[in-house]
Structures are given as structure tokens and as C-alpha cells.
Image (cartoon, rainbow, N blue to C red):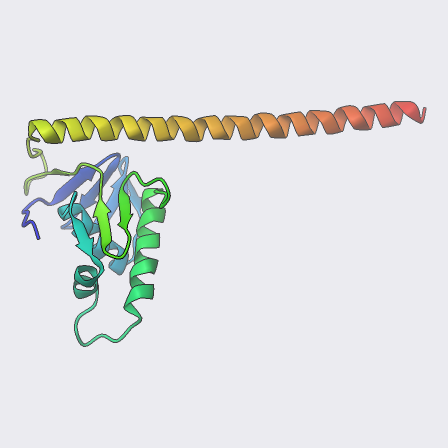
Length: 173
């Protein structure tokens, strides 16, 4: 595991404060239960690397804990995805690596203890961040386009119903 003294991990519009143990999005607290928080912290500190399900089990549950680990990990991953508004089929943050584990794919900036400086990314990291930002922008634009289409469709249906009702009323007058 990459050892970081960073108190703040930044990715996208999120910040993970490892001292306060909280996730924020654009400065607003996003609620996360303890297990999903631990999972997100591990994945962000290991960004870009596949974290195996066994590694997750070891971090999330001590050896003397007896639970259905697979179901527990799946539930924690689901909660993290919901908190990040991420989609398993089109991940922006958390990618499933079948039969192996999970990879945090968004670039993560590690702040220092004071939280006021960021680690300087290498050239490759800058490129990765730029590509990731473009992918995120495209995904958000696609979602906005889908929302607009849905709104137009609903408006058309409502207008069609109003016109049909007016024609029916007119026919009976």
C-alpha cells in the first residue's frame, strides 16, 4: 500500500479528509458509513492499482470477524458508487476488475498534512488527469443530453394529451 501522510485526497469534485474521516463534494459532506469509507480510502490511496477482494477483506474486517465477505464487499462498493454518483457499467471513479478486485481510475492528488499543497503530478499523471477530465465532461454532457431528451419527450406527451383532450371536448360540443 502506498503510504501517504496526506490528510486530504482530491479527485474530481471530491475531497476525502482522512483525519476527519469524511467525504465532501464541492464542499458539502457526502455521508458514508464506516466500511464504505475505509474501502474508498484504500482505493484512493492505491489509485491506478487493482486492489484485490482479499486485500479489501483484510482492511474492512479483522480476522476474527465472521461475515459474508463477498456480499459485504459488494454492498460497500455499491455504497461508494452511490456516494460518488458513479456507474458500474461506465465508471469514472471505480472500475470493477472481474475475478480480481477494484481499481480507482480517477487521478488523485495527495495534499500534505496542512492540506494546502498538492503533490506535483508527473507528465504522465498530467496527461492522465487531462484525459480523465475530458471523459468526465463528456459523461456529464451525455447525461445532460439524456435529461433534456426526457424532458422534451414528457413535454410532447403532455402537449399531445392536451390537444387530444381539446379535440375530444370540441367534438362533443
